[in-house]
Length: 279
Figure (cartoon, rainbow, N blue to C red):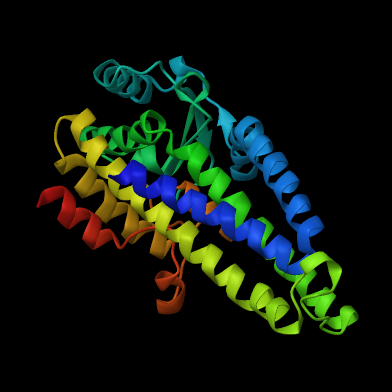
């Protein structure tokens, strides 16, 4: 059911992208949006992992230098039927982790130094199992494409703003069916908000699914549930110095956020995730 929901949301995001393109430039604008969507999806498929690792400052980890981490990953990969992902270390004391890669054969798992120092063996396995669940479910690719598409819709909305300023709000009969002033206002204001809501829904849905699958891989939900509570406290106390666009990659939100920002967070509420795990 989760996979069907995600597929429908991705279809809605793509459709929204094409609609905004048509509202801005008519048939030509929709064609441009379609080509742009194909290019962005191709780029997300091939390069999202490299970009994510580079932006986080992650460094390749020699398996022999972190035997505890390597042993846990090997154990969990055997249970999940996955090849061992490439391992990366992120400098910094804030405990967090993320997985990236377009498929299990090209996956990578990055953990912070703080995560290795803070968590018990059971909690560490719970976190790693959650990340391997993302790999197994191919969530990283979906999340990367959703983020890129939402960002592109924001870019098109910016184009709509300039079209409204310089185009004077042409009627819908102009520009091969392009929208008039009202349509451009919708593209400028409503479309980015709708894209953000769709992206957040996709991200939250995949987090819940990864929690459930991760508990199955680990053999118990207790380790992950305990780790989520500790990670939430530490990340509020010591947020990571990253760009907001990167936040959706991590197992818990690495940014300090007020109530409004938490409402638009890519992560479900931690207490809700813990309740579902232990319920």
